[in-house]
Length: 448
Ligand SMILES: Nc1nc2c(ncn2[C@@H]2O[C@H](COP(=O)(O)OP(=O)(O)OP(=O)(O)O)[C@@H](O)[C@H]2O)c(=O)[nH]1
Ligand SMILES: [Mg+2]
Image (cartoon, rainbow, N blue to C red; front, side, top):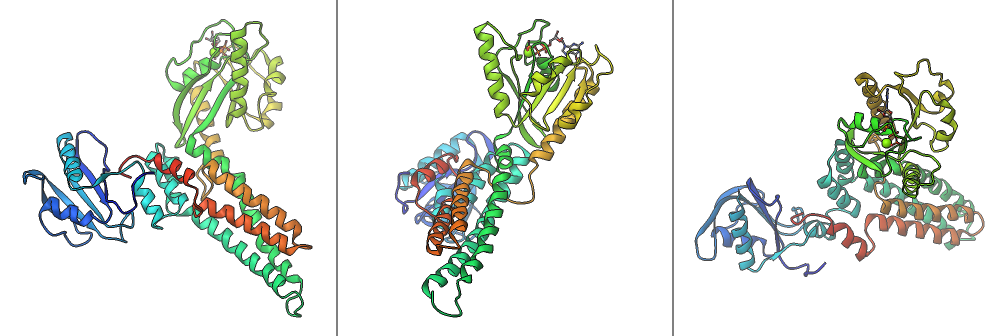
């Protein structure tokens, strides 16, 4: 990111375009001066709103605005800040940007305010990521998860890891430094054992539910699969409430993946219809089948669809399903008394007549229940990004090595614990990884 940390930046922090109010933020050593120059008055008391006329270079009034003076360090960035809440017309926004440039302020880059907050110790990297997610949140689940992370949920978790590991390290180093002293028997490294194993346990638990955090961030992926003509596209359309995919009595109608986006149980969901699974000579259809299998493999939940009059195909279909997936016996209006008790133990089963509103509601409710039980935002803060998972996995691997060596080579175990701590530092953003920072902060909008 360009620009010296000492220059003063400005940005429109509200959305561009016509609105009741527009908000400009200024951060840096020239913040106070910008406020006093534009309003031609002394800055108001810190954190008190004051109504001011704002003037351009020629002394013409641009707007009347509420202004705030937010001196360091009690500001979002930790620097001197000023805020201008004026009227939200494109002409005023344009004139304000011009006057800031005239007095020598620089237009902020995306995420530059947040980056300064991070660099001034106002937040760690996980909290900055939480803030980015909160701004992007489109569903209730995303909002809750992001808010908790922004408020330091993940930070609290890794601080407990760090504390335990530092304790373990202290025990081990005590033994190395005083190997012959009577009151420092070799049982010292044994005292390190519970500290390390508690962290291993906690990290393993976090990793085991990391999918959940990532699914909440990215959305839940659901794939509809089954033989040609089973009624997959019909189900997608019924759930979507519109004719998203072509339906016909001809087998092999759908060849590409057709996805619709919806919100279920407060989470973003991508529901995808796929080509019917069968052996085929047709290259286009064969490609569709290949894509269907890949999508089903990567999906969080699969809905297997089987024609109620064609139960012989069940074993073929279940090869692509996993335990707890959903199995729909379709066209129930055409076949009665389907016995499917065996599959009920492994899958969530449902007989569906796609033309019955009640049946579609049942399927919809079943999906909501499944999503809620698998992906509900839990009480504990968790890992929400591949970056978190990677750091924690590396830390965990180092600790597993440490535990093995503890009994016979405590100094080597100490080295592994230090590696584990290093990975925790990376999670926090305490090591200088410019490329990671650039990636995270550049995704913010300008003005945040
Ligand atoms: N009676 C009845 N017909 C259905 C039902 N569901 C689907 N059909 C019919 O079954 C035929 C196939 O439906 P599709 O939804 O196109 O099947 P598909 O699984 O998407 O088929 P492919 O795209 O070829 O893999 C169509 O003629 C549908 O109208 C149902 O619940 N009851
Ligand atoms: Mg289809």
